[in-house]
Every structure is written in C-alpha cells, then in structure tokens.
Length: 232
Ligand SMILES: Nc1ccn([C@@H]2O[C@H](COP(=O)(O)OP(=O)(O)OP(=O)(O)O)[C@@H](O)[C@H]2O)c(=O)n1
Ligand SMILES: C[C@](O)(CO)[C@H](O)COP(=O)(O)O
Image 1 (cartoon, rainbow, N blue to C red):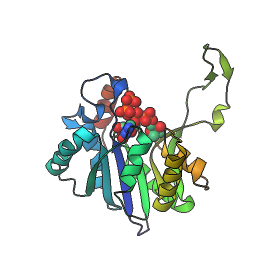
Image 2 (tube, rainbow, N blue to C red):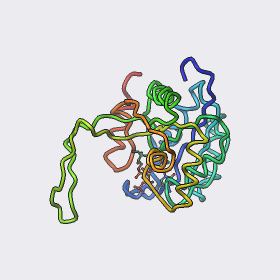
Image 3 (tube, rainbow, N blue to C red):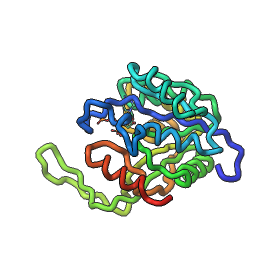
Image 4 (cartoon, protein in one colour):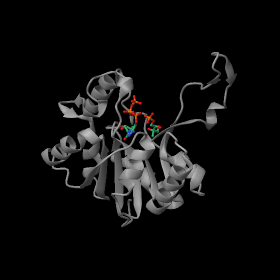
C-alpha cells in the first residue's frame, strides 16, 4: 500500500452465529465502548486511504440491520451488504463477487483491533507474492492430540505461527481458487488454505500483532475493551 497506487477492496465477513460466545446476540453485534464490534472493524478500513471499497457479508436476516448501521456510522466505502453462506468460506466467495478491485483482503468482522500498520504490512507482502496473511509466532508449546487425549506429536514451535486476518491476495487468484474449492467441495478455515490447495502460488506470512484478537469466547470481550482503551 505504502508507495503504491494499488486499489484495495476488503471483504469483511460477519455472517457467523457466534455460538462459542454463548450469547443470544451474535458476537459481531455486541457492544465495545457502546459501539458494535463490527462497526469498530469496518471503521478501521473506512479510515485507510488505500482502501477503495468494502463488501460486508452478513447473515441473511441481518442485511437490512447492517445497511442501517452502515448509514448510521457513515461507512461510505461499504459498496455492498450481502448475505453470507453456511460456512465462512462460502461467505467470502459471496463477498468477492461484490468487489472488482485488483487486490483484495479478507478480514473477520470480529477482529476489531487490527492496526492500519499491520494491514499495510499484509498488503505490502501480498503485492510481492500475490498472497499473504498476518500471523504471530505461537507462544505456547503446541501438541497434536488424538481422540483418546493422548499426545501424538509435538511440532517444532519455531515453525508454528498463529494465523490471523486480514489475508491479502490478487483478487483473480483468490476468486479462481475459491471457485475451484467450491467445485471440489473443499472447505477450509481460512482463505490461505484455499490458495495453498488451489492457487498454485506460495502464501507468505507478514508478522502481525498479538493484540489482533478474534473475538470468539466470552473472555475475549473484556480483553478487547481493555485493548481499546490503550492510548493510540
Ligand atoms: N458462515 C460463516 C461463518 C463465519 N463467518 C465469519 O467469519 C469470522 C470468523 O468466524 P468465527 O470467529 O468462527 O465466527 P462464528 O462462526 O460466528 O463463531 P462460532 O464458530 O463460535 O459460531 C466471523 O466474523 C464470522 O462472522 C461468516 O461470515 N460466515
Ligand atoms: C480466518 C481465521 O481467523 C484465521 O485464524 C480463522 O481460521 C477463523 O476461524 P473461525 O473458526 O471461522 O473463527
């Protein structure tokens, strides 16, 4: 982004049910400092000059509600609010069809703390390789455990990274990989794996920040409140 005139589109995915949060309200609509989590997320990209347009993907029952949020908060870069699918991957593909920039990022609507600097680092890495993800080195020892609860492998921690979003790609590459994945019935948990499997190009890691948390379970909300209060 820095120093380039590339036009970026962002797919913000927020069509999940948030079952692990255990709240009646889907977690993307829970309030952080009196503002929905999703709005915090959208405002990050709205504030960045390098971002030209946003495709917001939400639950089919939430389209009108989110169109109202977009108007209420003046999110002028949101080009479309579209209904998502049963899996995150399906939601991403629906968002991709609503953008026509050369470069795209996919970001979780429930990651409201990513910094513009980290977004720019991911974008810059993608423009070198066509595909990049934000990630941080894992701090804990990670082990593979079988169904009986027995440890079967301990990968070398030096090679393990916790993958985040945004994930950034040349749009044509990501769209073709997603369409091949849909044809094959493959469903992964992030967009990088779709490109790893069907894109034919290496996906690189751009080091992000540990504060770029994905709001998933109840204890994530007070943690996010604390992080939001930190001086910028
Ligand atoms: N069919 C889906 C599933 C998930 N997401 C979005 O993908 C992001 C990451 O997914 P996750 O944190 O798993 O959210 P949920 O699927 O809602 O959570 P859970 O698995 O606890 O139900 C979230 O912003 C979520 O709204 C989506 O757009 N469409
Ligand atoms: C895309 C992602 O945030 C990268 O860590 C993660 O895979 C999303 O997983 P979820 O189960 O859909 O939250």
